[in-house]
Structures are given as C-alpha cells and as structure tokens.
Image 1 (cartoon, rainbow, N blue to C red):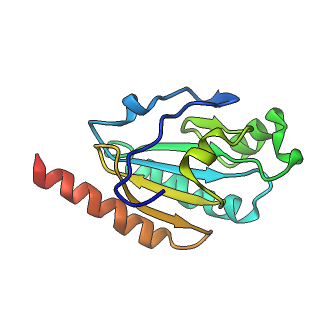
Image 2 (image 1 turned 90 degrees about the horizontal axis):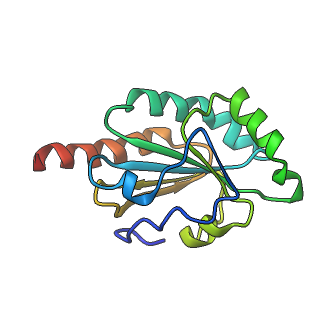
Length: 151
C-alpha cells in the first residue's frame, strides 16, 4: 500500500477473535492502527506488550485491530492462535487471515507490520519490524493532532 491510499475492506477472515469490525465501523470518528502479527514471529511477541500499552493509552482516541498473518502451515492452528493471543493480552479484534486475503489487499509482506489510517481511512504511516514504537507513537500523535485541529 502507498501513503494516502484508502483502507481496504476487512473481508476474507477465516475467523474473527475478540469481536468483528468492518471498515465502515473504523472510519469517521477516530484514526485506526492495524497491526499484522503471527504466532511464529518472535519479534511480534516481543513487541506485543508495547502494542497493548499503546492500545490502552490511546483507547479513547484510536481504533486498534490485529491481523494474524500465517507464515507457514504451522501458523494455521486456530486453537494455538487463540492461546497465543490470550498469553500476550491481545484483547482487540483479531482478523485471522489464514488465506492471506487481507494480507494481499494490504500488499503486506512483513510481521510485525503497522498501518496507521486517519479517521477518513487514508493510510498515513506504515512501519515494519519489531522496533520503532516511538516512531509509531509520533505518527499516531501527528494524526491525532490533525484531528483536534479540524474539530
């Protein structure tokens, strides 16, 4: 995906965990962070406490959606996905993308990967890899500041 492109529809999930959301649920009121992760990704698990902290700190200002992107056949076990999500405190909605439908729509190749959309659903920031939560926070704050200036 390129910056300023609209958020793809959230369709093609094998299953939703922790509730289901649609693109229209996410657009209009507040910006959205969509993060891709996988149960076989060590960096994803290391970053999860920071993602959760981020989710909790911004809970009134930001939508957060997780996308489980399998990297191999071993990542397709739904019970294991549920178990790892519970172990790592992932309480936000999880789009289980076993068929890579959303992964392909995002043209995403990485876990962890983070996509920040403004409240109109336009991509404002993309980042991949386990580090850089400070940069992610800066970008989210920038989108939030723009939101406050327009209200």
